[in-house]
Image (cartoon, rainbow, N blue to C red; front, side):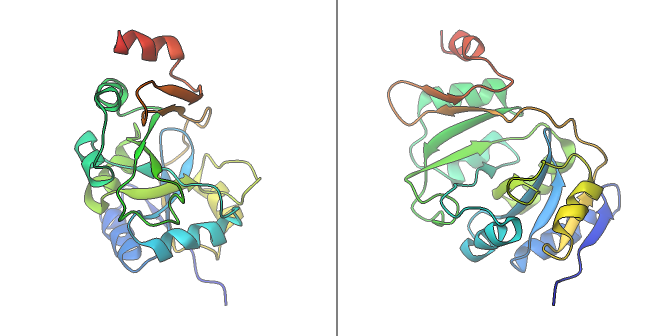
Length: 207
């Protein structure tokens, strides 16, 4: 029996409460971010994170980035945050920059099977409101793997209806380019994917 997927407008007074209840039961919530709609579970709930792979038909070896509501939540995910990571985060968050940091051992393998995790603060009021109350969430695009990333709640529903519990409808997202991905685990940074933030902008901050 497929589950019933509920859609609730972001402006509804119960939207965040419903999302929290769903997440605490181990469910999945789709919500708008500053790029596309994301599909998320509580980052420290390994079983819930595993269900993201099932809902999306996503290859299990692909790590899932973690979104947080504020820079201070980075401490919940890593015990070893370099000065470079802090500098870049304080300059570009909220925004399209994902920093890769060594992960806490308590973060489930379903988020990342390696010793690192990618973290970002999205520049979207609905996303941040949810993340501030829920805490860190493992979030990836709310689509079937290999299908187009959704920019509206309807596009999420078209792909994931019956596979996830809740969609928060925050209108159309800007879509577009995935975040710039920077490995901050070593003594020198590595830009693994250049997105909206260029290597020049990053080097300018690091002086």
